[in-house]
Length: 304
Image (cartoon, rainbow, N blue to C red; front, side, top):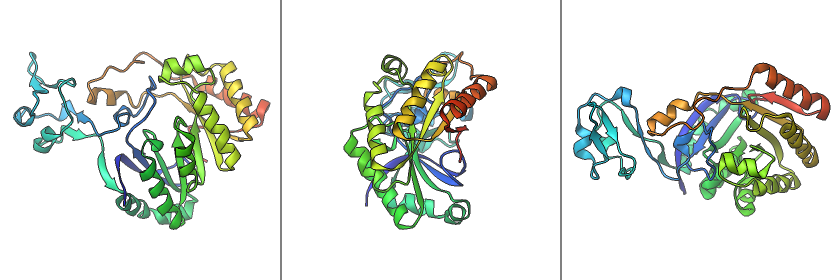
């Protein structure tokens, strides 16, 4: 039995695959997207989350911290020096108010599958199932494969949401137990992809082609980021790429600011602080273009 690090399990989701689904968010991601909505899931290992508004200043954390990472600031606030923090979570163990928590926890594949089975009746009645997301599920390939395999054995529809930035052998192993792939493509231009995500898109596009050859159903997902990838030229290039693959379904996911508050829990500055979401009119125009010019089945915000 394998174990993996899970940072969230979300029930009754309707935007990440068909029907009612349970989402499992796995820790770790190889990309560093500037707009990332789950920054707590980027690290391979659990990291400390500090909910400053819950802090009652009991100061137990100062005594528990072995490295001096927790300290009193000059303005009387309990603070965290991230350069000293080793994420040992000894401060979280003594915190009486829940102001300090680990971003994720170690779970066995059996524990995860047992949780997923609790919603089986909803999957069956709605045509739903489970979706492995993150982070990036291919960062924990053995664990992800075992969860998918066990769900398949229990006749639960399986789906992975992936950025595709992983060796083909790793991705192919997961495909053996996957009914649907939600495939994130951030940009068709390599230079811009590197600038906004930290990595090239060559492997991502190559893996998309390989998945199509394998015959696994793909839905291409595009996070619409204002001024980065929401221009007509990029969306047309993406539509042509989808057509070459034989992919008929595209999800447009307009940028939102719901994840901004998470950066404060990590004492990190949000790099796109002043970025506004694309207008509804602009999103609608892009959707209409994809449906009329390329005959794609387009969903805004996901859910099918």
